[in-house]
Image 1: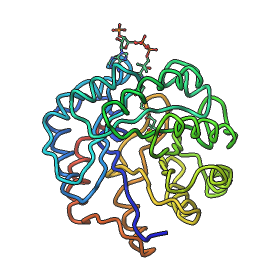
Image 2: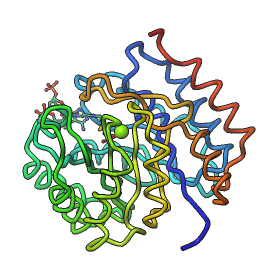
Image 3: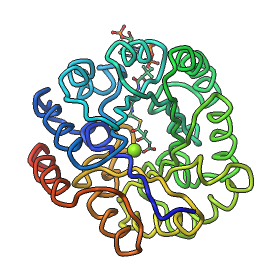
Image 4: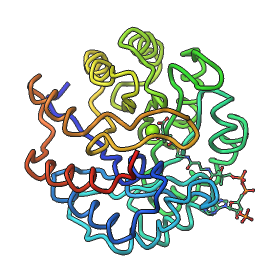
Length: 285
Ligand code: HMG
Ligand code: MG
């Protein structure tokens, strides 16, 4: 294992998608440009989803068109179906992501279909990504707890994660969608997954509702994971997981990793500029 950890910046997508006041396209572009100066290699910029479901992401094409692309940064977009994939391809996303759930309740609430239906829907997206030579990432939501179905069986996470890998995902991001995971449930999950999937193909995606996200990242580091999703300023929440807070804050993860001797390649001063800007974009709560 190296001492290098990759932080996949989620602020512009997971961070902003739940904001109720429509954020100006220019502000979204400015946020991505500030993040591009921080040293990230991966930034999730937006999602090509139904604007009726997530109005905040309606200007995905304009945002991707307006950003200044820094060399070495992969600008990613969520694509739930072929229509979304076509939009992301036309807007020159560098990689795309499909997103499934380990629980049936959240699958229905988030993408309006069962888990198996979603996997069937992702197959042509994965094929299109292969044809276009675009890297494909996968998410599994509700990996330890679901707001509708309660605790999640790790075997169910394994089934869905393996299916995403079989579809061609280079990495599966494990979503603690409602921020209810603990180091204990995180370890139990990883112990099940790591018998079948190498740590290099897994990422941690912890929301911080319960204030345990950093502890869960520490538990995941102990199990060999080296990629984590985080949002600048701790922005966000999921529109289909009521009450869930944002992703763990990028700056907090960066500081924790530095303390533990891991290198993220991120510039703390540039991060602070992006954090200040991001926090000013939030709707009043
Ligand atoms: P549906 O209603 O079942 O599908 O939605 P549909 O095909 O019947 O389409 C409904 C409407 O959406 C139609 O428009 C389509 O044209 C349109 P209408 O005729 O009603 O005007 N439509 C689209 N428009 C733009 N782009 C598209 C697209 N597809 C259809 N790609 C669908 C199914 C998946 C589209 C919908 O449920 C959806 O968009 N869901 C997105 C939910 C979402 O974005 N959630 C947040 C992201 S996931 C997340 O945050 C979790 C994560 O962070 C990990 C974690 O924390 O766990 C990743
Ligand atoms: Mg999320």
